[in-house]
Amino acid sequence: AKVYGVNITKLHLSVAKQRNIRNAYPVRADYTYLPFPNGSVDHVLLLQTLCHAPNQAKVLLEADRALKPGGSIAIVDSMLTKSRRSLSEQERKQVHIIDTGYVLDVTSHPDLVAILEKLGYIVESEDYTKQVLPSLRYAAAGSGKGVSESEYDSAHRNASIATRDLNEQGLMRFIMVRATRPETHDTAGHKSLLKTFRSAIPNLNERVKIGKGLEHFPRIPYDDLPDNPIH
Image 1: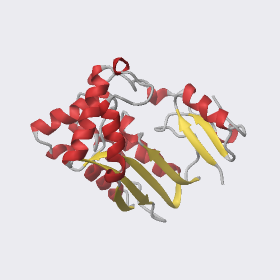
Image 2 (image 1 turned 90 degrees about the horizontal axis):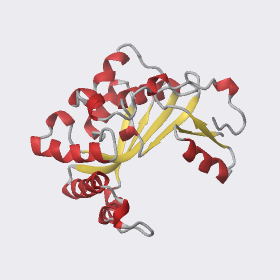
Image 3 (image 1 turned 120 degrees about the vertical axis):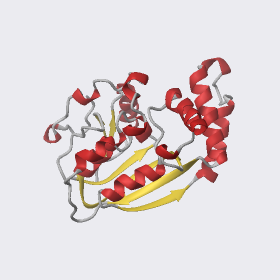
């Protein structure tokens, strides 16, 4: 089996290439435009990355396009335990600290499950907060090995603290969502799902400039991928 690691950052890809892992191939691409044909991938892993997407629904739809019938998607991250639409004003302010600190859009577990089920997926979730909380507390303390207090800008530090606090309070949990794609499903209406996550934050593009123009990132033809591609 081959494993393709998709990243848009040259530095990360360079590190991955240096590790020279057998059957693992780093690919520079935007995960809203994957360089793989329809129905060509067995599994997709989104490990603490969906929250950085300018449009989470678009990432899921692209993963769905590339997956083989019966394939699976695993999404792992700290997620809200409530839909964004049901957050109180105070909760929105807390989440906004994280949104503007080091992610684009904190994933909502109920919203994520809803979109996957609407696509026909069989969805299971596991909570790993207990195992991850020590790391969240360590990061929030700003005292990691070799990391001085001055190297944390205030926004990032506040976001780390808010992530720890909301996980301790239960408004966020560190969850792995596993979704199995049906053998056949109706893809009609996929476009309507693109607004699912963004509707709660209509000013996303004004608030966060990063990600602008990513839709035009060049796709890499699948047939042209070299044995160990770095682009």
